[in-house]
Amino acid sequence: MAGKDRDRFSTATRIRLLGEQTAARVYRSQSRRQARRSRLTGRAAFLALVVCSLVVALAYPMRQYVSQRADIADEQRRTADARQKVERLRDEKARLQDDSYVKRLAREHLHLVLPGEIGYTMIDPEAAERRRMEEGAADRPWYSNVWDGVDNADRRR
Image (cartoon, rainbow, N blue to C red):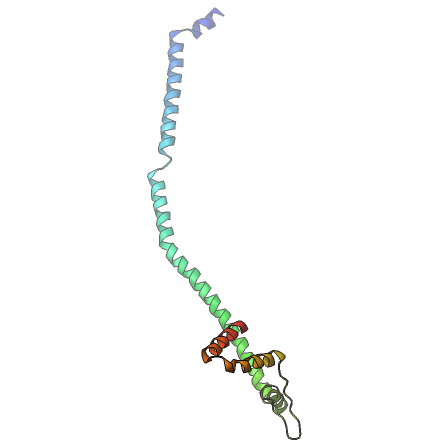
């Protein structure tokens, strides 16, 4: 055992251990410096610059592309609406070729009465009340009647 202790405390052993510890410390400090330095290398900076340039270069064309796609969708919707309107108008045109349909429209909208028939017109009770009120308007100045007409038109909206 005495031989083992002597090896343990010999100068050569101490120097070797001291050298190993120093080498380990140097290696750790170098790896720390390299870790700090390797965070942003020249290649990484160049890659970041290229990526940013691509994003800036493609931003406007992509915006235009998205905008044009929205315009195309809007025009397609308008085209579909126009086709539906054309189809409705074609149907109406076909219906107007029928004489009975035209007679019905003339009776409803133009109050057409055929010979031998008696036509009746129903008066709206609210319209009759308005007429009675307007008959009393002859006693007032003309500008009051104009303003009343404007007020009544405004209320109907």
